[in-house]
Image (cartoon, rainbow, N blue to C red; front, side, top):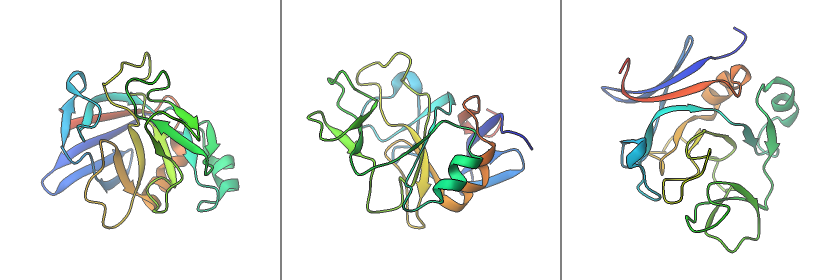
Length: 182
């Protein structure tokens, strides 16, 4: 397998599943479930339905084999530092963009104590162009064993994400759908 063309996120009887080629993994979505992309709003806790390209890879070099990531990833890679954030303030001109801290606009810190952001793959949602209040920081990222949901992202176990990562490119399409095949 050279690359993954499409990743599907779909509902199953027991939760949600990420499917990519021969891989199938349990995943979690936003605490408010799925929502039509045109109804998505900042802070609603919902994962937008649609087709979203993978944009890049951010990784914690202290918690991930940085050499392996740089050598095997087909995505543009950027190490996360303690001074990185992502703006979720809809009135900021930097809304839905990574920034260096400190920053006066409301933001998420990408350097976290837990492992949720050890690997972050931003999805191409609300980024071309950015529309204020339509949602920000929609990522494919790591989940921990006790992660019940996200704030709107898709999360899966780090080991599962590492299995598909070498085959993901900036042309990999992530399809978030209500049911498989819908």
